[in-house]
Image 1 (cartoon, rainbow, N blue to C red):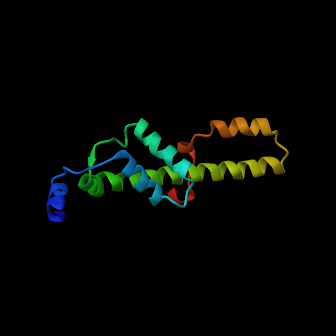
Image 2: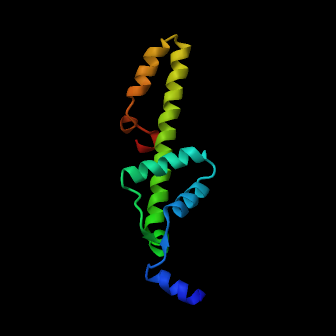
Image 3: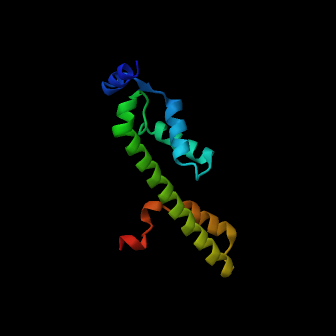
Length: 120
């Protein structure tokens, strides 16, 4: 029976459900808040970057690796942006800059415009 199931999966006929994918991704990123990871997964689905209907073999070989790398990039970009906002807020506090103005600036910061030292 196990041999038959392995052969079926080789040809892509055993499907991986969305809930199985979610559980796998959440456990892969267990160092982060579960709701945060769920939000990233939902955003990827809404943008149709992560779609439904993957075979187990297709997920393991192609889609899973791409999705994990995409999530790592999102987390890295968001972390970098938030750290830079934090540094800006520390500067603003030290220099008595109005909090409302700082909030407006932080809301307008485009993460794509931020230069990272390693990229120079």
